[in-house]
Amino acid sequence: MSRIGSFEGFQPVSLKQEEDDKPSETDQLSMEEREPDTEVPVPKQISRLPSVIESALYPNPYHKPYLSRKYFVTRPGAIETAVEDLKGHITKTSGETIQGFWLLTEIDHWNNEKERILLITDKTLLICQYDFIMLCCVQLQWIPLTAVYRICLGKFSFPAMSLDKRQGEGLRIYWGSPEQQPLLVRWNPWSTEMPYATFTEHPMKYTSEKFFEICKLSGFTSKLVPAIQNTHRNSTGSGRGKGLTVLTEPILIETYTGLMSFIGNRNKLGYSLARGSIGF
Image (cartoon, rainbow, N blue to C red; front, side):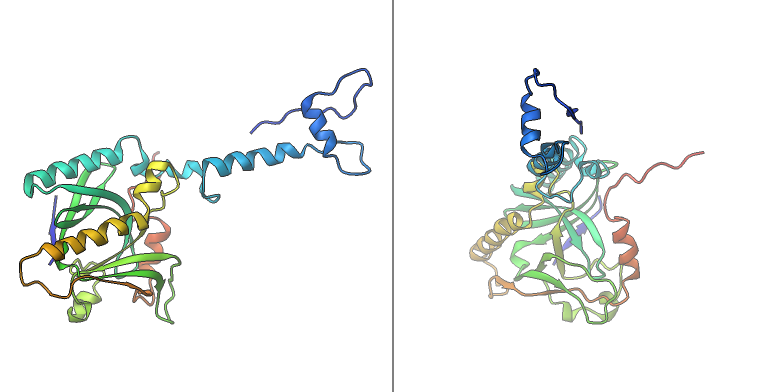
């Protein structure tokens, strides 16, 4: 059903104060918070201030701003250029209207992470592999919304003997039956014929307000579900006749050894990333 195209600073605190000197506001705060039975005031406000600033600027306390500079998608104008390129291509090929776009991480059937741009039009879901280094579209997959018949939301699950498991939640979109796929397709790590796609939130969600919105999985889901329902309702063809089913259940990723995904995901090979320089 799917179609793939190429394409910190300290303030000094006085240890001893003359009686004639008037204490400053900072010294008063420090003296009020001194530990009992000690002559040296403890400037607790100094250690408390950076944490307040950090929590206000970065909602995720584990995210460090310098890490975002490694991802080319966060470079000024990168995501805007990608969206404009895709809009122009869609206008020329199908003339459909784009309802929204998102930056998510796709997880394939071998648990490999891949950076993706997703767009929803009136009739189609587009999954784009975009090179944010060269600023060009590498691959574009077209999925008719009328073909999507099931959406699953839930936590990731793995076989009991799997060695490479992941935490978190995701979304899986079905436009075909995995059970009907040949064994060679299901166990081929490079296969692009799987009749479903699995997504989770992009690592750069907390870098800014802009990325917080376009990397939010719930925002994508809230737009995708009604778009599919509308196309099923307005479709005049025979179709499946079953409509759309939305389930909350574990999302199974059937990998056991997972050596390839372990190496790839730890090194973020599925993202357009600055990986340093090699020179002599």
